[in-house]
Amino acid sequence: MINLLSNLDRRWIFLAMGLCVGIPILVIGITGKTLPETPTPLAEAFFNEVDVAGESKGRRGHLLMAFDYDPASAGELSPMAISAVHQAAQRGHRMYFISLWPVGPRMIDESISKVIDRHYPDLVYGEDYVNLGFKAGNEQVIKVMGVDLTTEFRTDTKGTPLAEIPMMKGITSLEDFDLIVEVSAGYPGTKEWVLYAATQYEIPMVSGMTGVQAPLMYPYYPGQLKGLLGAIKGAAEYESLVNDWILDDGFRTALIEGGMSEEDAGPLAEEFARDPGQVSTWVEGAQAAADLTPESKAKLIDLATGTIPGEFLEGQRRMGPQLFAHLLMVLLIILGNVIFFAQRRSGGRS
Amino acid sequence: MQVLTRSIPLLITGLAGLVMILSAFFPYTSDWGKTAGQFFNILAAFAFVLGGGNLLKIHLKKVSDQSEGWGYSGVILVCFIATLVVGLGKIGVYPSADHPNVRLSGETQGTGSAFWWAYEYVFKPLTATMFSMLAFYVASAAFRAFRAKNFEAILLLGTAFIILLGRTFAGVLVTGWIDPEGPFGGLRLEELSVYVMQVFNTAGNRAIMIGIALGIASTSLKILLGIDRSFLGSGD
Image 1 (cartoon, rainbow over the protein chains, first blue to last red):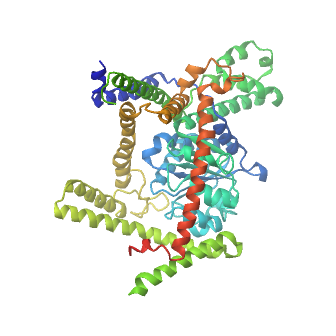
Image 2 (image 1 turned 90 degrees about the horizontal axis):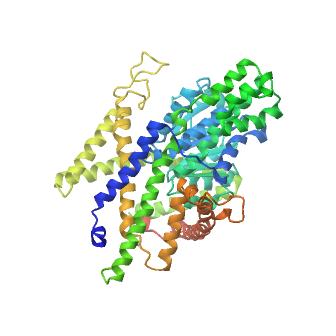
Image 3 (image 1 turned 60 degrees about the vertical axis):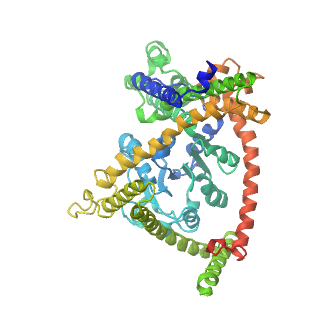
C-alpha cells in the first residue's frame, strides 16, 4: 500500500484537485448558497476607511481607485475591486480610476460595467466617476502625480481634457484625494503606492492584494496601510461587510421613511440585516410595525426576500472551492508524511 | 568614444539621481524631480517600442536558425504582429457616440472591436488558465516535498496547517466550539492565522525589508558615484 502511494501517478492528484475545485463550483452555482464569513479587523478597517473618506473635510470622499492587476489574478482581485466600487458608489464618493498596468484599464472597465452601469445608472461620468486609464512609468508616475497630476494625465480614456471634466476641478496632485484604494497583483502596486504616495504625502491608503503579496505587505499595516485585504479570503470578508451594510442601510431607510425614529430604526435594521427571515413575522405581529406606512412594510419585505446580485457574491462563492482545495492540500501533506515515516522505519529511501 | 559610452551616461545617471534625492528632501526642488520624472516616463514609453523590437529580433532569429522550439517563436511572432495590426489599425472599432460619422473615432479596446475580441477570448482565458494551473502543481508538490524532516520543517508544516485551515471555513468547523470571547479565544484557527501573519510574518518581513532597503541605498550610492558601472554593460 505504502509503495503504491509513494509511486502515485501525479495525474491522480491533479484529478482530485480538479474535483475539489469543480464540484463546489457546480454546487454553489446550482444552490446559490455561500459559506458564512466572519470579517477580520483588517477587512473591517478597510471598510471603515472607505466609509469615512472625506468626512474630515466635510465633503464627498475623493477616492483614487488604482487597479493594478491583470486577468491572471482577476479571480482573486476582481471581487475586492467590485466591492470597493460598490461601497464607494453606495456611499456617494467620487471615484478617480487609474492603472499602472497596461491591462489595468480593462479591469477598470469591468468594475464600472458590473457595478455602476448595472446598479448605479444615475451616477454621471465626469461628475461622480472618471477613468484616467493607464500610464507607463511605474513608480515614476506616482512621483510625478504627487507634484502635479495634470502633467501626467492630460486627458481621460475618452480623450476629454481634464480641464473639461467637472469632478477634476480642484484636483491638482495626490494630496487632493481623501483615500487611495489600491488593488494590486505585484509590481508596480501596493508597495510603490505606499512608498511614494501614502508615506510621503500622508494620504490614507487601503489595499487589496493577492495571497502571494499579502505577507510582504503586513508590515505596513496599520501605519501606512489603514486596511488590508489578502487574497480571496479578504475579498469574501470585505464583500460580506459591504453586502450586510447595504442591506442594513436599506432596512434603516425603509423604517425611517415609514415613520420610525432614527434611534429605534438603527438597532432594528441591524437585527434585520443579521436575520432577514424575521422581517415577515415582525411586519405582521410587532406593535411598532402597526405605525409604519404600507409602502415601508412592502419595502422591508422586498429587501428581506430579495437576492443579492451574483457579481456581489463572487468572493464568497469562491471560498467554497478554496475550502476543499485547502483540505485536499492538508490531506496530501499528511499522506506524504505518513509514507515518508513508513519508508524510513522500514529502511527504505528517505 | 569613451566619452559617449561611459562619461556621458555616468554623468546623466549621477545628475538624475542627485536631482531625485534633492527633490525628496527639499520642497523647493520638487519641480526638478517632476521634470526628471517626466523624462523617465517618456523613456518608459519608448521602452515599449524597444521591447517590441527586441522581441521581434530574438524570435525572428530563432525561426530563421530553426533552433530548438522555433515553432513557439513562430506563434509568438504571429500573435504579436496580429495584436499590433488590429490595435493600431483599430480593426472592427465602432465610431464613438460623440463622433458617429468618423470611422475610427471609437476606442481601440471598445466592445466588439478585434482588439477587444483578442483580449476577451484569447488573452484573458490563457492568462487565467496559466494561473489556475498553479493549484494542481502546488498540490502535487505538497504531496512529494513537504516532509517533517527536522524541527524547522515541523514548524513550517504547523504554520502551513494553521494558515491553510484558518483561511477557510474549515477553521470555524474545527475550532468553532472555542468561545471567541473566552481566555482561549485566540486558539481558534482563524484567530491563529491572523496572529501568525501579523506577528511572526510581520517581524520576519520587517527585518528583511530593512536589510533590503539598506542594500538598495548602498548599491544606489555606488551607481550614482560611478563606482558600480555594471549597468553600462562594460563588465567592470
